[in-house]
Length: 441
Image (cartoon, rainbow, N blue to C red; front, side):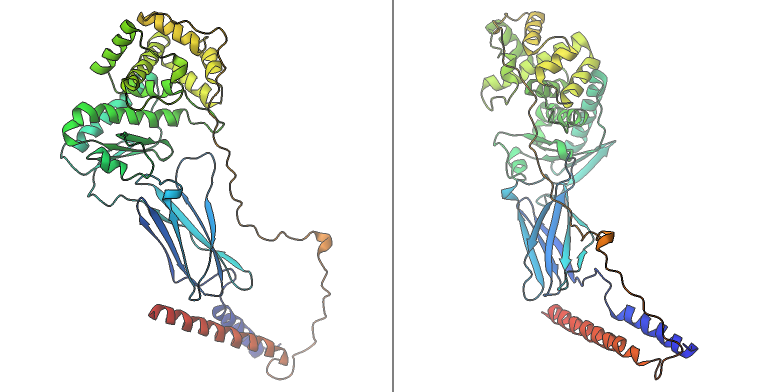
C-alpha cells in the first residue's frame, strides 16, 4: 500500500468515527425530574422514538439493603418518556431527602446505554426557611426570631447529656425542620398520626417538629432533645440482622435525654407508686396508648426504669444492652446476658428500688424476641450477555493478505466502506432533522 493510499485510509477512518455514534450512546435532549412535594415526582426523558426506556430511581438514606425502584416506561411516537412516582402509594421521604434516578435506553438493535445518575433534593417550598448550624446539626425554621437559635442550643445540650450519662454520641450529621405548628408539620407527611408533634426519621437522620414560637421553652426544648435521642440511639444500635429495642427502653432513653424530669413526669411516678398505676413492664414492649393519661404514665414509667438501670449499673452496661439487642438477641436473653435478669426480674428490682408495690408475676412468662425486619429482595442490576465458553467459540479462518497494492483508488474494496459512511451520515442527518422538529414543537 503506497503512502497516498495510507493517508486516505486514515482520513476515512477518522470520518467514520466522527460520523457514527459511539456504541452504547443515545441522543437525549431532555432528562428532568420535578417534585410536587410531598405528593409526586415526575420524571421526563426525550429520546428517539424507535427506542425503549426503563427508569431506575431511589432515595439516599441509611439502609441495610441497596434497593431501588425500577419500571419500564413506554416511549410515545415523539420520543417522549414520562413517569410519575405517586407517593401516596408508598409514603413520602421527609423534606431534605435526596432522590436519584437514571434511565436505561435501548435502540432498535438492542444496544443499551445508561444515562448519568442525577439527583433532586426534596424541599418543602411552602415556607421561607432560615438556617442555623453547629457541629453535626443543621436546623431550619421560618417563624420567630429566637426559635432557631434556642432550639439549636437545646439540641446541643441534649447531645451532651447522652454523651455524658450514656456514653453515646452522634456519629453522622442530622437535619432538623421546625414548623410553627403541628398541623403544618403533618402536611409535609402523607402518613403520620394526627396527634404527632414531632417525628424522627432515623434512616434519613432527619427530625420534623411543630413548635409554636410561644412554646419554645416549655415544649420545644425538651421535645427536640427527645427526638434527637431517637436518632442518636438509632445510629448506635443500628441492626441489619433483625434486632430491635423494646418501646419502654427506646422511649425511656429519649425522655431521659430531655434533662431533669419535668413536674409531669415526677407527678406520674408518684401517682404510680401511691395508687399502684404502673403497667406490667412487658406490656410496654409494644406501642404506647396515643391519648389518655395512661400514655403519659407509660412514658414516665419508661423513664423511671431507664433511670434505675443507669443509676444502678452505669452507662457501660446500657451500651452493652443496646449492642446485644442490635445483634438480634431477644429482649429477655439480652437483659439476662447483660444484667443477669429478664424483663420480669427487672420490673421486680425496679419496683423495689423506687418503693412501688410488688406485682404478682406469672411463673412462666412467654419468651420475647426482637421484632424482625421485613425481608426484601433487591432488583437485579442490568446484565450483559455472558462471554461464550471457549468450546463454543467458532474459529475464524484467516485469509492470506493480498500481495501488492490493489487496482484503482486504493482498491475496489473501499466501496463497502464508502457506502457505510454515506448511510451513517444520512441516518445521523435524519435524526437531527427529527430532533429539530421536536424542539420547535
